[in-house]
Length: 85
Image (cartoon, rainbow, N blue to C red; front, side):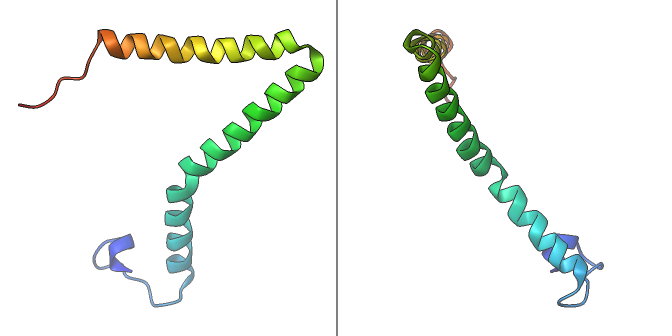
Protein backbone atom coordinates (compact mmCIF):
# COMPACT_ATOMS: atom_id res chain seq x y z
CA UNK A 1 0.00 0.00 0.00
CA UNK A 2 2.99 2.31 0.00
CA UNK A 3 2.08 3.13 -3.61
CA UNK A 4 -1.17 4.79 -2.46
CA UNK A 5 0.11 6.59 0.64
CA UNK A 6 3.69 7.37 -0.24
CA UNK A 7 6.77 5.95 1.38
CA UNK A 8 7.02 5.70 5.12
CA UNK A 9 3.33 6.04 5.94
CA UNK A 10 2.28 2.54 5.03
CA UNK A 11 -0.65 1.38 7.21
CA UNK A 12 -0.93 -2.15 8.49
CA UNK A 13 -2.67 -4.54 6.06
CA UNK A 14 -6.45 -4.48 6.31
CA UNK A 15 -6.62 -1.15 8.15
CA UNK A 16 -9.34 1.42 7.58
CA UNK A 17 -6.87 3.77 5.83
CA UNK A 18 -6.04 1.09 3.31
CA UNK A 19 -9.72 0.38 2.73
CA UNK A 20 -10.60 4.04 2.22
CA UNK A 21 -7.60 4.52 -0.09
CA UNK A 22 -8.77 1.67 -2.32
CA UNK A 23 -12.37 2.94 -2.30
CA UNK A 24 -11.18 6.45 -3.23
CA UNK A 25 -9.08 5.15 -6.10
CA UNK A 26 -11.97 3.10 -7.47
CA UNK A 27 -14.39 6.06 -7.22
CA UNK A 28 -11.94 8.40 -8.97
CA UNK A 29 -11.47 5.85 -11.75
CA UNK A 30 -15.21 5.36 -12.27
CA UNK A 31 -16.31 9.00 -11.86
CA UNK A 32 -16.06 10.05 -15.52
CA UNK A 33 -17.64 6.91 -17.06
CA UNK A 34 -20.50 7.02 -14.56
CA UNK A 35 -21.06 10.73 -15.22
CA UNK A 36 -21.22 10.03 -18.97
CA UNK A 37 -23.63 7.14 -18.41
CA UNK A 38 -25.97 9.07 -16.12
CA UNK A 39 -25.76 12.17 -18.33
CA UNK A 40 -26.75 10.15 -21.39
CA UNK A 41 -29.66 8.60 -19.49
CA UNK A 42 -30.81 12.05 -18.34
CA UNK A 43 -30.55 13.34 -21.92
CA UNK A 44 -32.68 10.48 -23.22
CA UNK A 45 -35.22 11.07 -20.46
CA UNK A 46 -35.36 14.76 -21.42
CA UNK A 47 -35.81 13.85 -25.09
CA UNK A 48 -38.68 11.45 -24.35
CA UNK A 49 -40.28 14.01 -22.03
CA UNK A 50 -40.07 16.67 -24.76
CA UNK A 51 -41.73 14.23 -27.18
CA UNK A 52 -44.66 13.98 -24.77
CA UNK A 53 -45.02 17.77 -24.78
CA UNK A 54 -44.73 18.27 -28.55
CA UNK A 55 -42.71 16.60 -31.30
CA UNK A 56 -41.30 19.97 -32.39
CA UNK A 57 -39.85 20.50 -28.91
CA UNK A 58 -37.92 17.22 -29.17
CA UNK A 59 -36.96 18.07 -32.75
CA UNK A 60 -35.61 21.37 -31.48
CA UNK A 61 -33.45 19.56 -28.95
CA UNK A 62 -32.13 17.23 -31.64
CA UNK A 63 -31.49 20.22 -33.95
CA UNK A 64 -29.68 22.01 -31.13
CA UNK A 65 -27.47 18.98 -30.54
CA UNK A 66 -26.67 18.73 -34.24
CA UNK A 67 -25.89 22.47 -34.36
CA UNK A 68 -23.50 22.13 -31.41
CA UNK A 69 -21.84 19.15 -33.08
CA UNK A 70 -21.54 21.07 -36.36
CA UNK A 71 -20.11 24.12 -34.57
CA UNK A 72 -17.50 21.93 -32.88
CA UNK A 73 -16.60 20.31 -36.21
CA UNK A 74 -16.27 23.75 -37.84
CA UNK A 75 -14.06 24.95 -34.98
CA UNK A 76 -11.80 21.91 -35.30
CA UNK A 77 -11.63 22.38 -39.08
CA UNK A 78 -10.56 26.02 -38.72
CA UNK A 79 -8.11 25.33 -35.84
CA UNK A 80 -6.35 22.04 -36.56
CA UNK A 81 -4.02 20.71 -33.87
CA UNK A 82 -0.33 21.18 -34.45
CA UNK A 83 1.42 17.85 -34.82
CA UNK A 84 5.00 17.44 -33.54
CA UNK A 85 7.58 17.07 -36.27
